[in-house]
Length: 336
Image 1 (cartoon, rainbow, N blue to C red):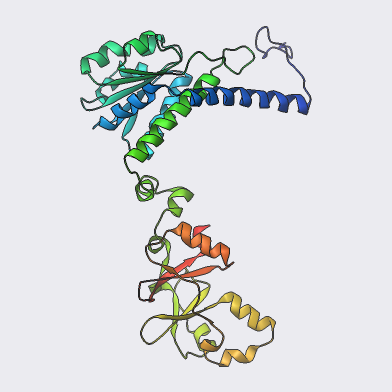
Image 2: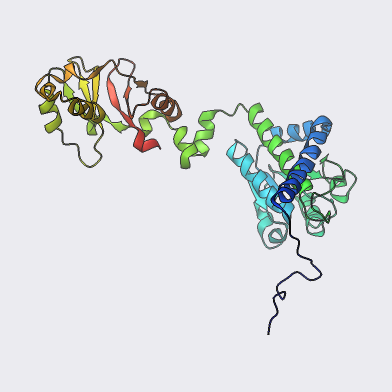
């Protein structure tokens, strides 16, 4: 029969700890890594600037490579470069020897990560990369390692003590690698003049991409909005609307010159009924609408529209052109 400790790690001894002890230990880990980052930031090596110059001059892609925990950090750095205006791919050192060296082109450059700078799988790459003859930058603790010596530039962060009890699990070292990679990506992005519009192009999905959309891309176009001309009786305006399944919670009131006169929302209707002001239903919508409502100009971002909706606690925001003519509505249910 398998005993209770059969799944335990050999030679391990389980520990019990109070919540205070657990939190205190976690704080010490984060503080340890934070101190390492602070030390590096205060003594930033000139090699960082030289690496930036190589990256600026690269007309191809930045090929990032590393193995183990450094490889995972490398994949994140490659993704950050790609999303901030620098073409980048990750090259796994093992897969490279099974066809993936074909990912490297003559206009590319290499960014190679290894804490020791002596990792066998990484060092095996170097003779092949030398034949392709592309620039190489190393991120490593040891500026005199085999990796550093075989790269054009090495960004050394020095020997660091890992944050784990055993001093073995990559923690502080990978934190430094990630911070250096992030710094390279963001500095390069600024030097390239990378804009929020460029960022939006690379991030079309999710809430981030949504915020960076133009309002005319996210709005419900006026063709499917509820609209009436000035002077329309309220009851008629409410009963005559048929715009399909995407019913908006507002009616746009349009002047004779096609500009926006006002807006009447479902909330306005509820207020009339709650106050027993039913007689307004037989008066022109102009008498109960909000005249000159809050609007947003086409060309603005959804993030701008969200700010207006939040500031004024409204649910519908008309989108207008330069002449004040309605183009559609941003409905809060479409952007939350």
